[in-house]
Length: 633
Image 1 (tube, rainbow, N blue to C red):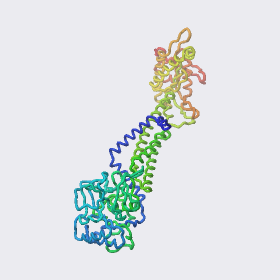
Image 2 (image 1 turned 60 degrees about the vertical axis):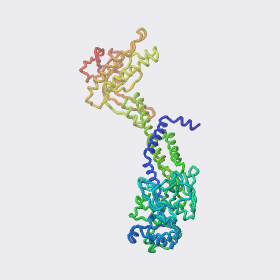
Image 3 (image 1 turned 30 degrees about the vertical axis):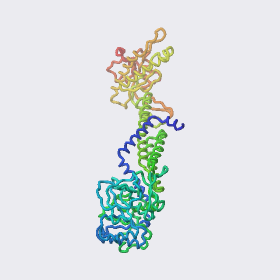
Image 4 (image 1 turned 30 degrees about the horizontal axis):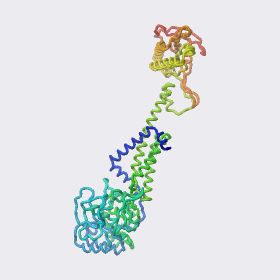
């Protein structure tokens, strides 16, 4: 119930982000399976490359028919007698098992001696099936099928092959068929291949059966959450179990760095030039790294490695019982990553900045990769890192975009509210600053317009609040539109008094144009007020009318007060004079009065002089001018 309550509190935007991320994630995985599979393999290869053992490996020793051997003893294929001699030399050196990464597809002179040596020296040879591409080869005779009544359907099926000559049918043989990815890399190999509904084991399995003296294998389904989809039992060495994925493939364990594999050149072996005891009780893999043999594959360590490295690593994986397990519920790990990371993003996103979601996603991806590496190297579990990581990145990006959009909407809404109480430039400046308790003011040359409703206080005492507020709302709205239309801004509103200013630098060349705009705004406001202000009952109240005062001069404009409670205002002689001139409109019976500084710019309007007055709060007398009433009709 608690989870349901938490889920119900998640905003719709977060749920939509999850749905959108899921849709994009599934679309990408379905549309580009091969590139993502390649990236997953590269991620695993990097782990193998970093963690592969560099200690000298002696349990599996490689006899390499390398370039030096071909140059000294002749090109491939060698005479069968020479291969037989190589096998005999290994037996004399104490090799426990001889595994030939070599196919003998056609009969040749010396086959009888080679057969005798292979049978006597516990040799295992190779055969190749065609399961990729369009290879139409069919040569030799396949052999060493398992004694199963049928081949399980999940193993790959082949109709073409390159096998050994018929006389080698009694020699144990295993297939060396790789699964080559589009980039040429080899990460797995079929454990068995079906040919004419009979299963044929891989070379490393046949070698393990020979080394463990096992004659029967069985395949069963895996069990448990972390168990493989399938497993083969009965190899006779270590646990005797080989884990398989759902397609019947074995993941290659790149446990040992190629430089750590003990390798002896074939020509050195034949010459007896090798350390004593090197082959004692060892499994020996005979193959070729020569470029002319064309047995090259991409490995985690190099883009062009010898194919025999694959079989060497598989043999070591069997001996160490470290063939990687691909869990049959392979979606479980990505699901856990998605649930843990996605749940954290959704439920904690309010406390995270937008950048924090991206950083968090990157950290989770890194942690997920480290967990993958730990499971692979410590427990031989091969889990998919990319699907869960991709989802986390997509969700973080989408949540960040949504959060950014939501923040922009909230900021715009806050700014709209802020600019409705403060001048727009002031609101815009405050929106990008941190709160401050310092004085933030500047001296400016301004034109001030102050308008006030006469007799409004008395009107408010006898009329309903709804009516008085409607009147004030209409006048303030009209004043704001008129002032902004003429380039000014409403600085502040105090009750029924409105202060507007036109500001600019000292000695502004546009002072005359600003004066005309201010005067035109005053005239339009006066005309508009006559349509807005109601005419009260003349028997009880005096008529409502608008008085306007205008003056220009220097003023200080800015914000003052503590950071937690500030005010924005304009103050100075021009502001005070505009207020006092509005108060004089009653005495002088003129709705628009203008100070002497502003009047100097308005000579063309034939202003009417009202005389010189000493106004309240002003030290020096002020010459007052009136805007002619005939111009206000």
